[in-house]
Length: 351
Figure 1 (cartoon, helix red, strand yellow):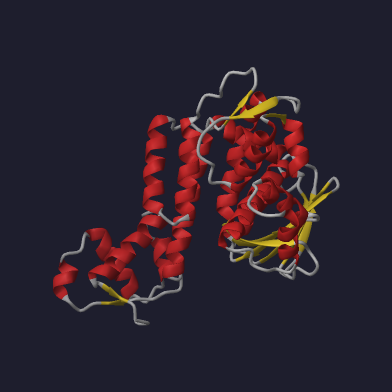
Figure 2 (figure 1 turned 45 degrees about the vertical axis):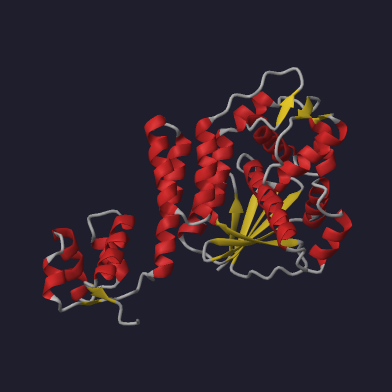
């Protein structure tokens, strides 16, 4: 199935949410002004991103880190060769940053999109990624919310930046910017952008993160006050990427107590829960059916809500039907089913 439209009638966040909820596989192509971007999906996961001139931009940024020569990186990307684990990871970091930045630019843009289940990459310049679509959507919306803070800190391109002493940052984009700044001691935002060859929004966001972490300063301006919520959200997003959902949920609980009205916190909570549910479904497919144990000792120890779930499986329902009929949230229902399996109350006939 293929369809197309314009982003004024079908806003990009709504489109991405639909693709995520539908667990779609295929290619989403978006064009706006003179720009073009493609995102390739597999069951709601971003597996690659492409854009004209992408390889050159990635190689230019990586060269600024001092970790590789740009021409060697470009040649490796063209031949689809591994650059070695550290460089491959750095390329993906830069590609992810560039992708999220382009989506932030796309939200207010008057562009058009085309969706196709044909995921042939053809002659496109693409880079492999492993990103949950909901994580990218969350990060895009979070950065939209913080866009005003970025513009307030970096209102024009002639601002002069200076690096501070300290350990090298872990993100390749940040290392590239500090490589430019430290080479000249003081450099303008415009010079950084031209050296990297990236959109202003992408560069400004990365510079803002460096200012907020104290790794760089604007000459003549007061240091940016740290945003504890933004810092915790970034840590929480990393935990979700690493599938440490319980730890991410603890961060959400702390954020909820500190600022329950912050939209970023609500979006983070939705992202954590949906990604956790998706991970559980990979372990227990929605069409799974379970047999009920005949051990009366186990059955007698169950709580009333657990007995209700067991009775549903006794009638022959699959997991998806049980979840729909449950009065609990989807996440809590699947957790309860997993607990019943560990207890031995439910038996997976496939094992």
